[in-house]
Each structure stands twice: as C-alpha cells, then as structure tokens.
Amino acid sequence: MFSRDRSTPSPAAKPVKVGAPGLSFIGPEVVVSGDIATDSQLHVDGRIDGDVKCAQLIQGIQGIIAGNIEADEARLGGTVEGTVNARTLFVEASARIMGDVAYETLSIDAGAQIEGRLARRAALGLDAAEPTLIATPVSFSPARAAEGGAGADTMFALGGGQSAARTDT
Image (cartoon, rainbow, N blue to C red; front, top):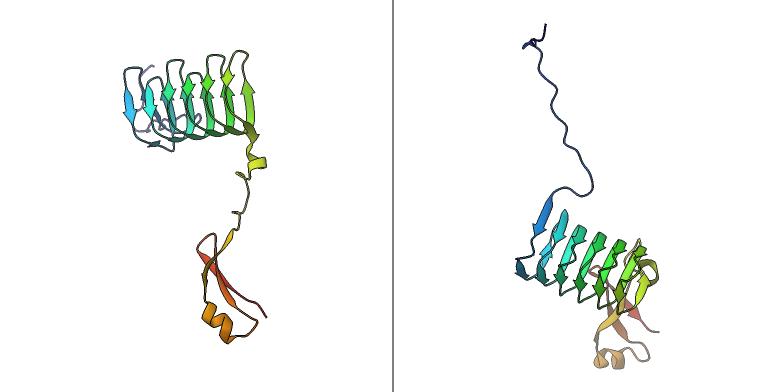
C-alpha cells in the first residue's frame, strides 16, 4: 500500500532560482584588499578596500566598502567611500555614502547619509544603447599639408577601435 514501484524513476528536483545565481559572503571578521568581481550575489558584513562589481550587492550595517561599486541591484546599509553605480539602489537608514551616486531606481530610507551628488544613469549617459563616439586627432603631418596646398589629412581615432580619415579641401 505504501511501497513505491521502483521501476518508475522519481522526477528530478528543479533548482529554485531567485535573484542572481550563487552567493558569496564576506563576514564581519574579513578584510579584503583588492577588487572583487562576480556575476552573482555578494553579501558584505566585513571590509573591502577596492572596487566591487556584482549582479546583486547586499551590505550589512557593519560593512565597509572603500572603493567604487557597480551593481545591477544594491542594498546598502553600511559605509561606502567611493562612487555607487546601480540600476536599482536601496539606501537603508544606517547607510553612509561618501561619493557620487548614479541610479535608475532609487529608494532612500529616512536617516541615511549621502555626501555626494545624485544623478540618474540616463542623464549621465550610462544606459546608452550605443556607445558614445569620441573622435580625437592622432596624427597630423605639416609636410603633407604643405604638399596638398590648402588641404591637410588628419586621422581620427574613434571609440570601439575604429578610425576615420578626414581631408580638408
């Protein structure tokens, strides 16, 4: 009555996916000197002396980050000494940020301290669909200008490893 028929295999358990895959935890007794980059979730209760780049950052009240933060989602409750760039940012009442903050969605609890500028990522051009094109002259030949009369060739370096030539006539 309660026995299982062993001829039928049991269905495989499906992993539950909530938020970013994986979790790295830096406890209150840990001090990290250097940059940290991960595609998963990072929970910081210790100290990081370096930049942090991750999918999801959770900083506890005791957490200290002395460096820049770049994350899709960040929940800050400790001290940050550097710039914060997050798509979604939650600043808890216990947080103290000393640096500029770039965000798409922002929530600041009463009592949080921010000593820096706040700006939407779109206003800073951080969410541009196409990279910004910057042209800078990389070479100029006065001898060639003299040969060509009034015209001169100038080479420009464009963002993304492209180049273009311009001829003045």
